[in-house]
Length: 317
Image (cartoon, rainbow, N blue to C red; front, side, top):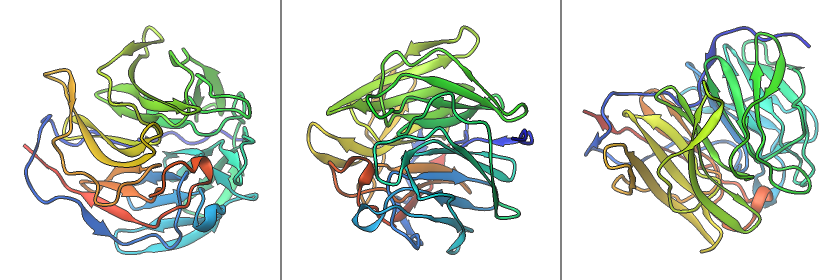
């Protein structure tokens, strides 16, 4: 195993200083992926978006790694092995770190960490996760990849593992206050947030902010319960996008915005035209982009994927 180069790129970046997007154009359709997918991973890099893993038509694994350059999607590589659903991913310079996941469409997790070099199209292995997991979330904070939540083959977990690309080593940090799978992870205003999640048939509205100095989680304003939502930091606030309510057996199109002044979440932004769970969301080229996901509720990690890509360009004051 070899250490990765420094130069981490976050999955979601702060855009503007204001906490309130101004009225403007709503969501717009973008070119669809070549392969429908849900329970996948999406990474935003300066030159392109990448979609990896997940399940597609009929809940079958998707092996093709797709790249979007702003005009069209192309296939750049194939995943090693037989496919992954519900992995997590982050960018390290020109490389994508693909972390864990469940094998094909099973509930058997892997501890494997695969690294894809976008310049050469080659894969290599990095240090394995401390413990196998799938259905987790990842975000980059202070040059390290934080992986939170997820599940093993028996139950959801609260594990919080941190990968240092410079040393190719993992370490454990304070676990989430509750074991959960399918949370959304986002770095906002220099802090890591865990948003929503689920365990079994229970959805959670927990929002937690990680205090890295004290190595502890602090409660933040909660949201209506949901899992598999997307989250991004943009216009000086956090947006939570889509997801699934198991209690209502509903795939969500709602977009929530954190009102830091009131300490509440507002549903005053345009909803997704196409409601989706596993709503993988990134900020790329001054737009919030939601890539793929499932329109059908109740299918867990073997969801029928969608090729739909939609973007929204809020105007930040």
